[in-house]
Image (cartoon, rainbow, N blue to C red; front, top):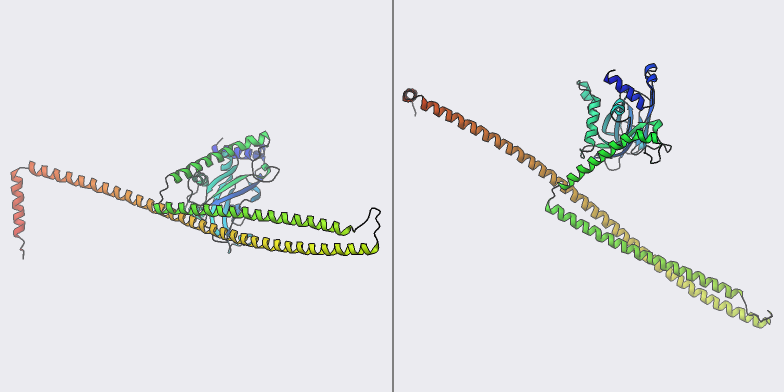
Length: 423
């Protein structure tokens, strides 16, 4: 059995197809689910969103499945030897992502499914892959350079190392292997058989993220920042911390005012309850009988006192409400000012980081230029040494040839100079 036939059988086994199905059914197909979890280093304009489309690469006019970042794309009845074409688009909204004229291509990736089965256990799980320029694979194929397998392996290898190149975090598996939730996320309580099948992809993802963490750590440890950028970053961080402290103090003050208002409302409610109870009970004797003149006089006195007390309480309530509204307005204004200051400081921090990155890039270019100059200097030194060796060889030849050779040379030079007239 050849390597290619073995790969196909392994592929069918990974996607749930038996050896008998391979021998008797040439049109075996299955459903595939892909999820683009995240995209990095992609040029996105303000207001644009990122979307993903997937279709069969061998069919130019094949129907494509589209989804936003983080959502699942499903392709129905995919053949065994299918190569999938994943495209990353930037558009204003989901409706614009369906229109060729209103969406902008940000990158693409060719995914050979048989390569997943033979080398990646039939599944990718949260794996970083770099993207090619739109249309690059078609241009390479048109001049006779194919090899989707090697290109796909290279994209996977660069996923953890090329942080500045457009890349995506990708998961892909057979649709029937999805958990009951329908999301492409590995479950801790999965069955033993599922955990065994998913162990390889999970391990590869962990290894890649470990490499990615080391690369980022090395980049941060070797980053060279200018003194001005370091000082600006320190000042921005200090200002941001001060604003955050002020915002926290203002939140505490606002909470205190709210508690005071709640206590005042509670006291007002208690006083209203007490006033209603006193107005409902007129003056009575032990037998409950009061002469009519005294009864009317007591009721009038109670009503007058209750009205005066109610007016005072209402005035107090209005005063507390005005004070609470004033304090709330001042607190909101302070919070808005603090938020605006935080946004300003964050912009300054981002600008300082961008300036530091530009400075790092200039330093790198200068280092590369210095290395080129050193290499050129070394080559010139080597050439000088070769010339000196040639001169020494000529001198030794002249000395070894004797006086006769020198005399003949002198005569030749004299005869040549006589034929020229200098004016």
